[in-house]
Image 1 (cartoon, rainbow, N blue to C red):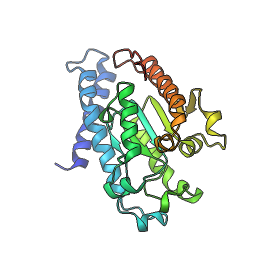
Image 2 (image 1 turned 90 degrees about the vertical axis):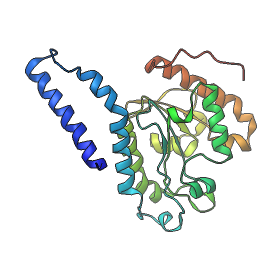
Image 3 (image 1 turned 45 degrees about the vertical axis):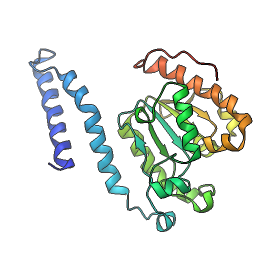
Image 4 (image 1 turned 45 degrees about the horizontal axis):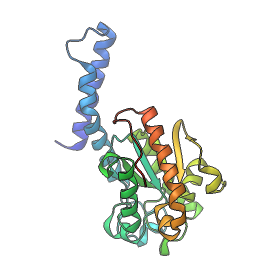
Length: 239
């Protein structure tokens, strides 16, 4: 069975159950909620993978000509918590996965500190291809690539977002405000609460920023517990 056929079956099942509910109300022979919940992750995984397949050969900007890999994103396709960075670096371009170098190792430690694992969350970037020399993304590159990220967010449906770094935060919030002004409060991204913090690569270069970054991710975890409530309430450990 192809992914398209599988998605079609799931959608037909959902349509059937909605029709039955319209006819009979809540008195269904089948438990609609159990079926849809059990299908959610598989359906979104198939949908996200199908979307990746449609865009992975993108050549809308010059970055597509020089890349080794199109870095789509990684993690749980039904994640309630999504992290968004700037763009792939050298290691990410070679391996095809975001945050796999030293910055990625630090990000894993940050997630562990607030009792998350990489496979629980979804990690993506503003750009899907590495800018030469890890330079800042150009406006035209962001314009070309942002629709891909917005579609990923739509498919995944995260309840909270952590923006990693100035460029990710400014792009998502459509602002030129400094990182210091964007940190410390809960931002709103199209109805999704978002916390802004430093990019892990910046923390490696500037260890003095680790303490305020820790404050940011603690705020994120408290926000997650307040909104999602699908994990045991977090108790901070001394860092």
